[in-house]
Amino acid sequence: MIGAVLVVVPLALALLGPLFVSDVGRGAPFVSNSVLGTDFVGRDVWQQVLLGGQTVVFVALVATVLSYAVGVPWGVVAAMSRVVDDVLMRPLDLLLAVPSLLVLILAAAIAGPGLPVLIGIVTLVNFPDVARISRGAALEIAARPALEAMRLQDETWWRTSVLYTGRAMLRTVAADAGVRLTGALYLVASASFLGVGVPPDAADWAVMVDRNRVGLFLQPWAVVVPALLIVSLSVGLNLTFDRALRKEAV
Image 1 (cartoon, rainbow, N blue to C red):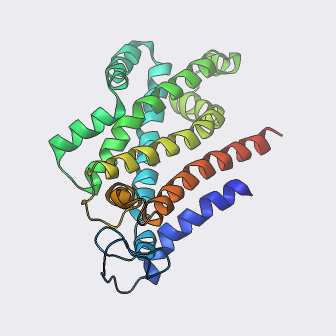
Image 2 (image 1 turned 135 degrees about the vertical axis):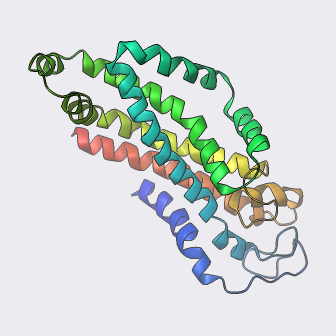
């Protein structure tokens, strides 16, 4: 239940929050004349919290789904065919050797700003790890006697590689999904913090942390609340996935 609460609260604010904001006004910066006061340009912090979660959540979810959509087939094909294994996996080693934040900054500098660019960058950073994990799981499954028997019976590639292998590695992929989604949240928040992908004055939880830290001691809620929401979503997702996997194991 703790994990569910930690996930539901920031998700509800991110998805439903904009419905409760009709007019965004401005006043004096860093004053406490409302629920959470005002930010560095005089905007209501509570309104910014309600408006600021969609980018972080949407980009992280879409990028994670795309990472698995590309990475899982990539890893399975590499594991099932020794001919293309090195061809598919060696370029990913180069990507894994470069720090993720450096890839994010360089790709953003080349491609320019925008949410589609940010989604593509986070997908690019995450999918090599997904491919390697999928390949490792598929290699173990490929050595099982059941799969050897299916090959001897001349079963189709679809039945051996997709139906049997995909179903057998589902638990491993599900266990990795929580960590991968948390990593995507971290990258999206870091990108927003660095001003990559979203405007520097956007209503975004990570941007709020960056832009309001200069007034942390004047108006701490403008930094603490969005930071806590990001942390809550990350921790809650991991707890929820761990709980689901334990129940499946029982």
